Amino acid sequence: MITIDNICMNNVLLASASEVFETMIFMDLEQCFDTEQQIKDDTLLSSITFKGDLDGCLTICCSSDCAKSIGINMLGMDPEENISLEDTYDALGEVANMVMGSIKTKIQQNTANISVSIPMVVSGKNIVTNLSDSSAIKTLVKVTIDSQYIAEFCLLYKHNTL
Image (cartoon, rainbow, N blue to C red; front, side, top):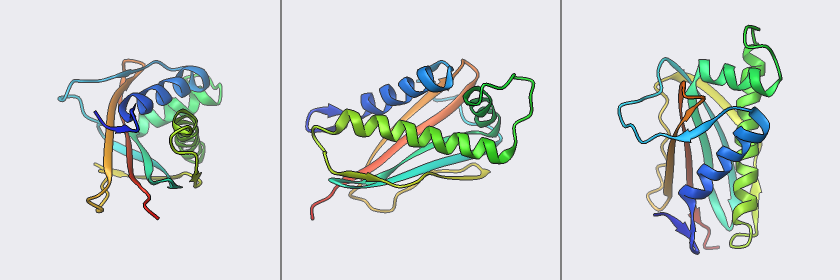
């Protein structure tokens, strides 16, 4: 169990993602414990960095089909409508922004000083997140979205000692 002053970061990450998906995206999100299920096909990775009492980044990795579905739901479009690549990227970036905002709110009593960057989205095949700094703590939560898509939420952080 990964904690910051008795806060379980796995629980914070999952609760924050669930809250955003329930209230803003209107999609079901559940933790996935099936190690066989993997993100397939082209993937998108949305990331947002933060610094202050904690330094690190939050990433969200999912298939391009999952990201399109997220964007369609966020924009209130009909499922049959086509969504542009730009709108898909914007939607996934906004998800990272909202999830990080929720995390920041949940941990603010223990880490009051955190500044958050603007999100960034990249695409490719088999995108894997790494942080070369061995002092960083990694919290990874795999989820299913609408019982159809696999996604991974990863929080990489370290305590700032300055």
